[in-house]
Amino acid sequence: MRAINNETDPLSIIQVFKFKKKKKKRLAELSSVGTFSGGSSNNLDYLKFKAEKFGENSYLLSIENFERGAEYGVMVSNPNSLDEKQTIVSTFGVI
Image 1: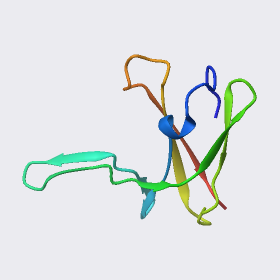
Image 2 (image 1 turned 120 degrees about the vertical axis):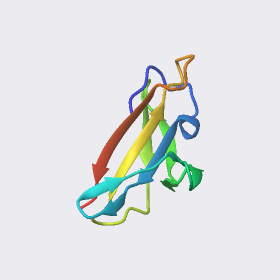
Image 3 (image 1 turned 60 degrees about the vertical axis):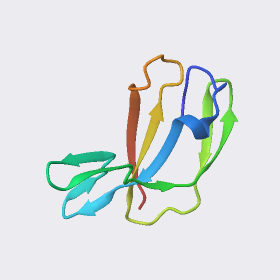
């Protein structure tokens, strides 16, 4: 992960999650609201990881429990912005 600097604790701004497979789709539901079903939030399957500073503006993430054939996402919130709504999402798969 590359950032403006690496002064922020990476565990507070980075989240790694596994997508749910549904036929040819990959789903990740952060929250939902239904008229009759109520609502739900934070239903993502998060993975634990270790993070350390790497150079002057990067982090090195170490994750041990990858499932072969699965697909994952990485969410990085913007610690340098006053508005926490700015989030970057990247995806990757494990063969």
